[in-house]
Image (cartoon, rainbow, N blue to C red):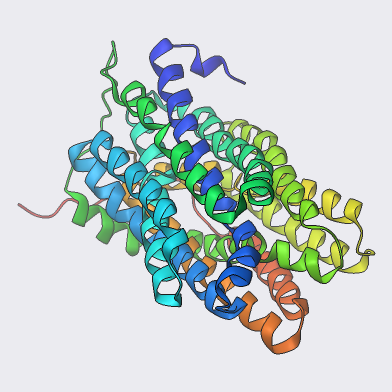
Length: 404
């Protein structure tokens, strides 16, 4: 499974990218733990805080194609340094905010844009350009697993910090952990001994975007990934609230998020290996279909700790394991020269769904007192995503050169 990563250059690049994603995704995926403490401390209300979290979902996606394009053109190093500093700064000054607008600026924009610019589009795009084609699938799985391991580590650590030093101290601790990832950037972007040359004609980033947006398979991929974003943002933002509605302690939420991250380590590695063996669209269809079944199972089960833990383990296996096959399809269609940009646009679609999942979840609990309608919508969208991926064509797109 890891045979393609035996080259020292490939292995170092992969592990450094995984380490950076560990920090940025660990911080991002644990933000739901702060919703209740923020509400208690500021009195702003769940709907207002959910709006800030929803803006964060959108901003995280919106920055991806921009950061990817800058990294494709000027290199990943400066982008990653700026991103980690911005994420740390946003976390550090959030405790000083006492208004909805302030939270939108710090959590919704600064922290989200920082974590987004040091996330999948830049890391997977930059890594893919530095390794041969046969290593990309496994490498993307390992990088993705790093983000999942970050969620597994950060959720219980931050929950413990919230309980011991308060949510403000936990935010400042998260800022320090973010800055600790800076040395990994040099390891990831250092010159390789044997540079990889990709035989792809470069017509410019705008031509690449125009080609992609005309391709039916690329657009179908966006639609499926939209539903993935809705699902993940709803859960990561409102799972602590669902746990509280069931009368269970907050530790159930933090451990559920940690279990999701742990299960997704194995899911990401498995998805990365599947990219080289099966058609990625079938892998995606199976993942989305399993989510619909799991949500249906959860709604029929009694509200207990073990129900949440088993639910988290099942969902975690596919949580962000959708990233390697999705990035693989983009790479098959358009090559890796502008993978950071084109996969970044796909992630933007993901986060438009994420915005709706986080925001509508807050509105639902205020309006109806629980998340029932959100669970039904989540189940229906997951089933739809499974169907949408089946017509995708994975062969490379044929580009017609403009007449000279």
